[in-house]
Image 1 (cartoon, rainbow, N blue to C red):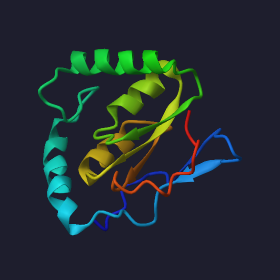
Image 2 (cartoon, rainbow, N blue to C red):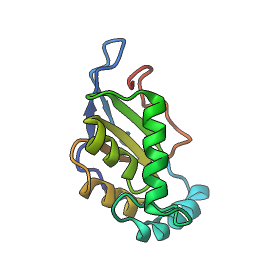
Image 3 (cartoon, rainbow, N blue to C red):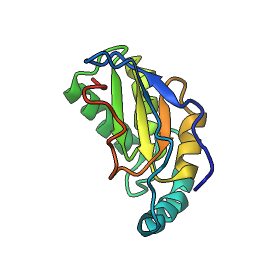
Image 4 (cartoon, one colour):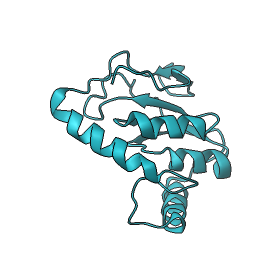
Length: 143
């Protein structure tokens, strides 16, 4: 997993406590026990297209309805910044950009999914990182 897959390394945020940017961790913290999961998600990344994510049991329309409901419940506004743990193909952050004029940072263990996410979004940042290790994210950095 030594391959860097992020197009941008930092997201400029409007966070509290003088947090101005959040950068991807220098180390992925993906250890040998997690490699099986990383490889599994890499294989599932072949399902990435449009707003379809790697959850292949749901249709693209289902993904859109779920994503829309989540962001409506969150009361997302333009220029908000959202953190997405387990971003997969980045389709939720793409929807956030397209329909809410907002952006975010997504983390995932799948380099292939992240490549798709980077190539299909404009303002969001994606990090290859272990979701079990989040100490690199400053408190209150996201809306």
